[in-house]
Each structure stands twice: as C-alpha cells, then as structure tokens.
Image 1 (cartoon, rainbow, N blue to C red):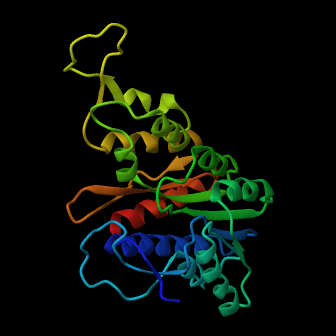
Image 2 (cartoon, rainbow, N blue to C red):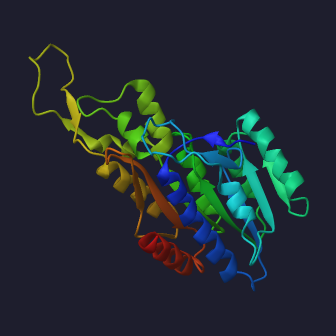
Image 3 (tube, rainbow, N blue to C red):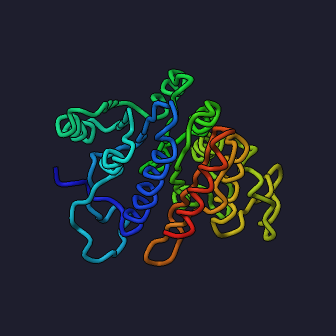
Amino acid sequence: MTGALFGGTWTQEKLNILERYLDAYTTALKNRPFQLIYVDAFAGEGTYRAGSDYAEDYGDFQEVRDGSPRIALGVLDKPFDRLIFIEKDPARCESLTGLQEEFPNRNIEIRNIDSNDALPDFCDALGAYDRAVVFLDPFATQVSWDTVAKLAQTEKIDCWILFPLMAIARMMPTDREPTAELAGQLDRIFGGRNHWRDFYSEARQQQLPMFGAEPLQERHRGSGQIAVRYRQRLESVFTRVAATPRTFRNSRNSPMFELFFAAGNPVGAPIAVNIADHILNNW
C-alpha cells in the first residue's frame, strides 16, 4: 500500500485534531457501559501521501502517513469496540480490507457503498447503549443534508465535518444565480433552497431592461457567509456545536475547508464540545 495522493499540510493538521479528540473521547467514556463505535464515512485506503489534488505547493511532504482509519485503530487506552469504514470507490475499499488482516482481533467492518445510503441504516441500527463518533471527510460535496440531520436525530453521535467551503463557493457565482443543476446540488447540501437563496439579491448594476426579463442577481464576494450559514444549519439539528471551527487554507491563503464539530447527545454534548473546543484552540 503506497497511500493515495491527496491534500497538503492541512491534511495532517486535520488528522492530528481527530486523533486527539478520539483519544479524549474514548478515555472519557472508558468506565461507562457504552459500546463505542467509530465510523469513517469516506475512509479512503487507510494511508495517504500529500499530492497535487488541489494543485498546491506544499514542498517535500511525500512520505506515506496514517489516514483516519489507522488513527482510529491506534486509539488504545480504550479501543473502539467497533470500527466501520465506508468507502464507495472499489479500489480504495479493496485496500481497506488489508486492515482486517493486519488487525484480526479488532471488530472492523468495511462497507463498499455510498455514505448517504450507509449512514441512515447505521443510525437506525444503533442500540440504547451505543455511542459513536462519525468522521465526515468527503473528497468534494458528496454529503447530503438529510444524512447530517439523520446523524443528529439519533442523539448518540458526535460528528466531525470537513465542509468543502471552496468547492461550494465555486458553485455559487457572485455575478449571477447558480444554474438549475448547481441549485439542485446546493439544495441537497443545505437541506433546501430557502437555506442559501438569500445570499443573492438584486444586482446594483442592471443591464438595459428587456420585456419579461428577471432582474440580475448577485452574491457578495467571499465565502465567510457560506461557512456561517452551514454552522447555523448544524446548530438547528445538533444539541451543541463547537464555537471554534478550523479553517484550512491553501498556499494563496484562500479558505478551502471549514472543520466543524457537533454533538448530539443532550447529556454528553457539553463535555464533548468543551473537549473539541480545547483541541481546536490549542492545536
């Protein structure tokens, strides 16, 4: 296994945050009667090498490193009772099967399926004493809002969400409304047109009026409003959302991703969010 080419230095930063949280999460619940589950919804192949997927210059950063599945397997103070690795790509999924051979004593499930199909079924199967951390780390804009809302409704899941801010901003032109196809995708991501359509207002500069023509629309430049809106959407379904997000930027200092943390359990959410905030503020 050589590791997929992906990301840059921010990839390691993201994984460091996840590792610290998983270690703290399992330690906090080690003496409670819960079955702890880790779900990696876009598991990849278990390792990675920083590459050119985003055409960024991150220097000499080519060694093979542990991806999120191996990081979750490496939590040993209180190991996860179950680990579920979801990967839609058959080749990457095949690479993941090596983890079952390498860790024969661990309860590892590998699912070759779309996460938007797998996660609702996982949620429906959760028992009263199940608690889970779900890592939503898509390669692009694959995560549907209905999936996120389903995770929150269980009240048994803590969720780390890597929100593809740059990709979504590119779907929302500043000088006109999105095409019908892009609007449909945005509806899926935000959970309805009413949750993003108000980014647009009538353009100050209009072309010569034409009979029956709709006024031109525009969106303020910048992606900050998009990240704020998605956070508000998370707050509408989860018990609590960490106050501190983490913005990952490219070499031109443009925001690429926003890392959010949300907790669903009414009893455990305050502690979980405090842990996540501490990590996000200090690493």
